[in-house]
Length: 325
Image 1: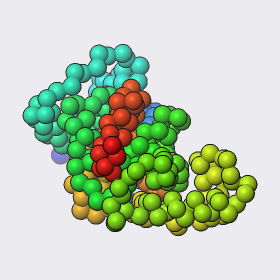
Image 2: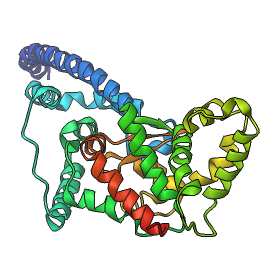
Image 3: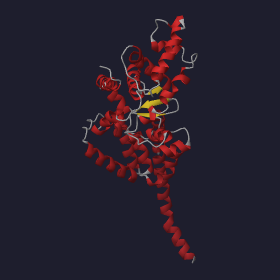
């Protein structure tokens, strides 16, 4: 038995040396991926992919900071070459100038989405996260994406949808800031609607409360001499809190932020729409948050490039809806 033990020792001695060398390689790999993780977390925070609570994270099917760090536990299965590939993918995503893919037809886009789903499900945990923060998957809109915007107005009981998207388009055009507060959207909705309520011969449905809200605001302006002759936007911004305009106008946002996304996210509940709007593969125009929306980057570029065409289309549909000749 003693001889057998000695023999085993002789065999294992060189393996121990290899093990130390391998350990050194793994250490370098770990350090490389740790560095890469920092950039991933930064990108995730910037894109609002990390949710406020664990519940929202599960609903949105994104990953928490803890999830990201848990990848480090699986680093032993990553080789140096694999790490280099991933690092190269991240760098090429940020800096490479690749030709934009051409829009595809509706049936082809459905097949592509199904194929992407299979591919994403087969990805490792690490690579799935990388696909979420990668801009490569979110650089252009397909024909079906744009078609969904057109069908966003198919169902409507009030004029709110029209003023909602017109307000978003105008604010984004003016500021080019992805984050837009609900407060700013409400103010812009009233500003745009002002002419339709007081100067156009519009026929608002009886269920539509917007004209009534504007009449109340008009009375507040008339009773306050300091507001006369000032642009509506400025008045509403300056007196928003004093006149408690949020309480007055908040019914405008009771349904429309969620129902507008129905062509992208079949409606079940407001909470469900909020969660799914934050999942990148939904490809809807904006994600919903507590007091603001965030414009999807692929839609942001489209909004700017096609601003005149989009606003003219929405205004034409609105005038038809309000029976304005």
